[in-house]
Structure formats: structure tokens, C-alpha cells
Amino acid sequence: MTTVKELALVGVGDGSDDDRLLRYMNLVYKEAYRRTAAIYPTLLLSQNTVTITDGAGVMSDIPFKVESVKDSGNGNRLLSPTTLPNLEDCHPNLSDVGSPSWYYFTGAKAIATYPVNSTTVKVRFIKSSGTLGVNDAENAILIPAEFHDLLIWGTLFYLAYDERDKAAGPEVQIAQSKYEIALADFTTWLTQNQPGPSKQTKAVLAS
View (cartoon, rainbow, N blue to C red):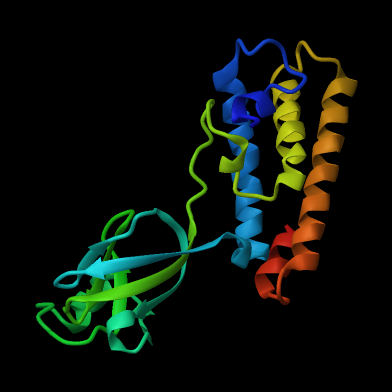
């Protein structure tokens, strides 16, 4: 199976500069991931079932964006997002006990519910993209494999731009053109295949 290192090094030297190449690839990857999350979020959706004990629990993954939290112990009641400061404004002692109505985060993966209770919640969310490592398998890249070439061209573009004092102008332009075409093709695919129109899609396309 192709590794991230092999993908990043397509057409680029002998692997002596892995850190820099992976830094560029991760820049391109995170841009593609954000674009996917904005245009076609259901492509990236995951679900965690989280045990809540006395109003607190821990997810197994770091969420990039939470789509919904439902209280499994109370007929899958949909909980509303809030923040700890907002709750404290209305409930200074945070002493209410009962079926929760709200959820908020106290850390990257730490989720809390209020009023305080012990239950189980289902969290639908988009994972954080994470950072691709040199020995990760290609399937660690959470965008469709058909578009992994945009990571190659994006990496080559950043590399050529960074070495523009060494690289010829046409080399930078070719890499940039290939990257922009690949990114446009990917954006078109996301737009055409996402389940329905959204304001987020228009915002991304306008950027």
C-alpha cells in the first residue's frame, strides 16, 4: 500500500527532505479537508457513543465540527450547544440535576452535558484532519483517493515556489496550474455530489 511518504515524494528527489515535503503536503491536505467539510460535510461524518458520568465524558476522537449530540438515555433528545460561561450566567452554581438539555466542551475531546446526569450521548461530528505522518498509509488521507493527485501537485507547487530562486519560472507556473486545476476539479466534484445546496457551498466557491 502506498504510504504518505511515497505519495509526497512522487517526482521529488530522493527523500532527503521529508520534513519540508510533508509540511507542504499537510498545508494542501488541510485546505482540501476544510473545503470538503464546508461543501460536503456528510462525506466526513463520524459518530461517537460517549458515556456521560455526572455530566462529563470523553470522546474517542477530536472533533473538527460537531453536527449533533443526542441523549440516548432520553429518547435520543437533541441537545443544544452552549458554552460554560453562558451556562454560568444563567445557572451560577451549575447544580441542576436531571435530563440534559445542553452540551459544551471543556477540552479537545472532553464533552459535558447540563443539567447534570449520567447517560449516554451520540455525537455526530467531523473529525479533525490530523497531521499526515511520513509512515502513514495513503488511506489515512480522508478525502477520496481519486483526488490525491491534488496533494502531489500542491506539494510540488509549494516546493517550487519555496525554491523559486533555484527553480525556473515555468516550473513554478506549471506546478501552480496543475494544482489549481486539480483543486478546481475536486471542488466541482464535491459541489455536484453533495446531498443538497447550502450557503456554505456558495461561500467556499466565492472565495
